[in-house]
Image 1 (tube, rainbow, N blue to C red):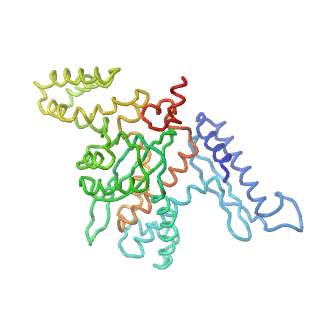
Image 2: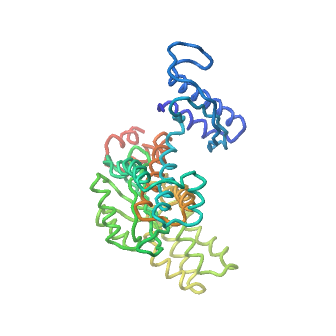
Image 3: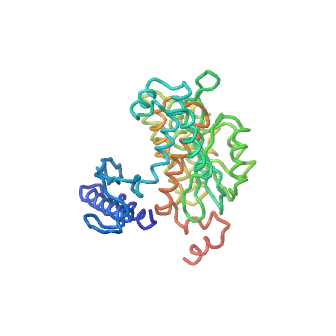
Length: 398
């Protein structure tokens, strides 16, 4: 699929949620399929020609979920070979990965009853280990190439988040963390930079993960945005000499747990006054005032505030235009929901490699989507956090 077509689909999907948008998108999809089938058959639909390469053979129905709503597609079939619309092609990797994980669990006898039912519904109950191995190898080649690609340029902001999934290990079912690293470069673009599995509280794990990103070329990291994972702060400081921003949203949830339900509205209102300040200096002053006001009734909350102030307000040392994006891990919320949705289908993964396979395939698709989206941050606002003079020029010229 050409970049122009991908941009067209993206533009339409970002439009208003209405019947008109869905009709426009359906018309564009139908036209794209007609053009692609014409290229495969050698002649337009309904035409006769001795130079015909193939023949149409009816249609198959498929639902296409877009930001404008669900669209029912009639995908043309061919007498010889198969056809799949190019504008749906990016979604195939994750679908294959999901099928591979399901079938791998099935052939190794470690699947749940729900997975067994899925295998039968897929018509894959007769699948062999060799067939699954070939499917796995095909997906792993693409995912591994994506996860080990060189990282170029400067990446001032790095978001890291963990999603916990169930994995079989030595006959036991354990919880493992699927770690995702997303960065924004000095061109304002978002990319998925890495995926790994492991214990999310161990400093050696975090150091090894961040070092693997650095070895691939990650540099220029100024701020790491994450939850309060033990060991991550020390690892980020050692590998990148970067500050750490503790997710403000999750911190607030933890803070509110120290107050009874009836008292929470008042506590919430007081804490929110901190983040409403216009400058870092004013926010630190307000933090002290709020902590002092809460100490008598909520001593544990006051102690928590005293211990976590620098981590929670770290984002205020950066451009104000970025505060909403770098104060929490919320930018990864949609990504995590998609991982959970697919993981819930499987229930229990057969091994860690299966986790990386599925999560990596999903992140590959997400990366493709971001590649054709508008910049996440503007060049002008990134100038002050970059050492790249090319990025800094627009801000100076202004």
